[in-house]
Length: 223
Ligand SMILES: *Cc1c(COP(=O)(O)O)cnc(C)c1O
Image 1 (cartoon, rainbow, N blue to C red):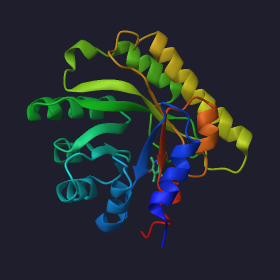
Image 2 (cartoon, protein in one colour):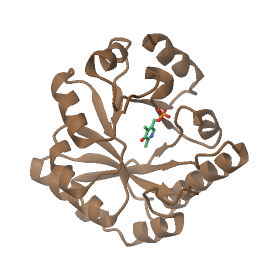
Image 3 (cartoon, rainbow, N blue to C red):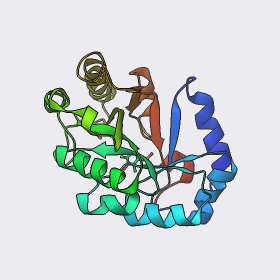
Image 4 (cartoon, rainbow, N blue to C red):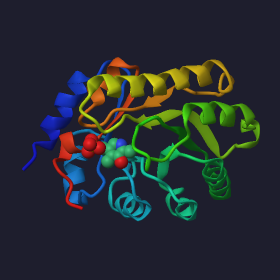
């Protein structure tokens, strides 16, 4: 048995002031996730639409649900009533779909633009150059269904700490470029979501203010 409350408190103690913890609950059953809720955790991250909806309908209303996985446009409508932040906007088409579905539902959803810097080729997201160009052309005044809050990214899945740091730095630098350029007029462009169980301490060194941690809280996932 994992000591979930203890694990959360150990992580919270290691986070600088102002850094938010997303407890990644994907693949863990509600009774286990509720242990984290009872320990005071409120932000939970899921990576599959049906699983987020099911948990949101079962758990208390004050959970702050974040979607962190690859999101297909045909799944957006399902999660809009429940999700407060989508970390994984990886195309203009997805951003438009989230905006349209949120408006249709009568709400506004926080989103992060996903940056791809890792060496793995299968990962989703914009390269830094693509993202800066994409953001420069965005007409956010006409997107009242979304509030663009920042960026999300992952480092390469390697042991080489220097490589991991350089990936995180590239994500943070892209955030800075957007924040002082194309996103300068956004209401609350303030979030850099990076760092998972094995690399979040490096992410914090590089400027992360939102970490997404699953395994260190809940133990290994059973897929
Ligand atoms: C699963 C997942 C995490 C959490 O990973 P852990 O190694 O279990 O901490 C973080 N971010 C994303 C995008 C994920 O899919």
